[in-house]
Amino acid sequence: MSNPAQGAAQASALDLDDAIQQEIGTLVLKHPLTGAPTTSTVQLAGVIHPLRVAHYHSKQREIQKAMQLEGSYQLPDPADAEVDEVDYLARSTLGWNLVAGGQPIPFSTEAARQLYADPRRLWVRNQVKQALSQQELFIGSSAPA
Image 1 (cartoon, rainbow, N blue to C red):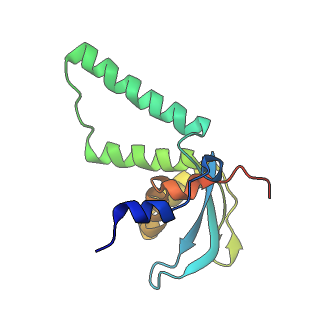
Image 2: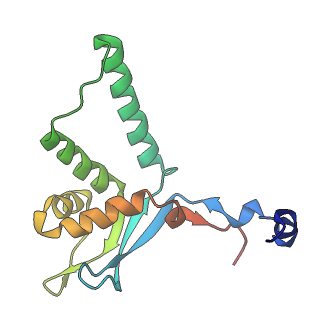
């Protein structure tokens, strides 16, 4: 059995500047059938990006207001929750490199909203949704390159 103190002595100290929270991360989409990475990318706002911070604060204010007025918070109808999720994902998307039918898809928040609402492309929405909660996607180094 190994000695835990010995393992700790072998570990090196973490320089906190090697792991800095970034405002933007890039998701590399994976093929939905093979799981292989593609050249298609989506730029996403991280948790410290002003857009995500504003969204979080807005939702918290909504919950607080409902609690103060009614003493409870009613969960939204599932259809409304889906619309809210699509809106959140679209507002958290800052750009992309996507193609459909051999043609680049121009980015806009409205184009993102349409893409994420398309049931035929639910796999894209799911990858974006999952990526927004992956801390590693938004961690970088402050060390000069």
